[in-house]
Length: 156
Image (cartoon, rainbow, N blue to C red; front, side, top):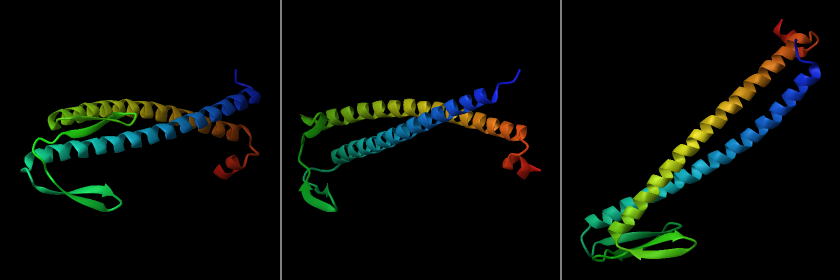
């Protein structure tokens, strides 16, 4: 027993809506992944910089980037503390080793979030592929059933 043309059309329409929703979700997830990747890179740079400062001697001259290709000359200060943002514009002063540990913990959380998001992206991509294949099969089946179809004529 085969489905009526109306049932096939309804299923195809539902699949098209679902496909569009999945693609929208996928785009959103990819943007989130880009933000996580950028945040991770920023945390890695901050941690590496802190560890590099620990290897420098006191009074070593530095160039501090301010942004927009603007640099500030500075020097290292013995046992200087670090200001670390903890969210909502709140900044906490802490010793360098503690700040480095905070950054390491954040990196771990960012990596876990990235891995979870990558799994969700793969899952959603598989759904998109399955629906696309199903729609393609429906389209080919409809073309084979209707000899007047231009697609069918083109294959002969």
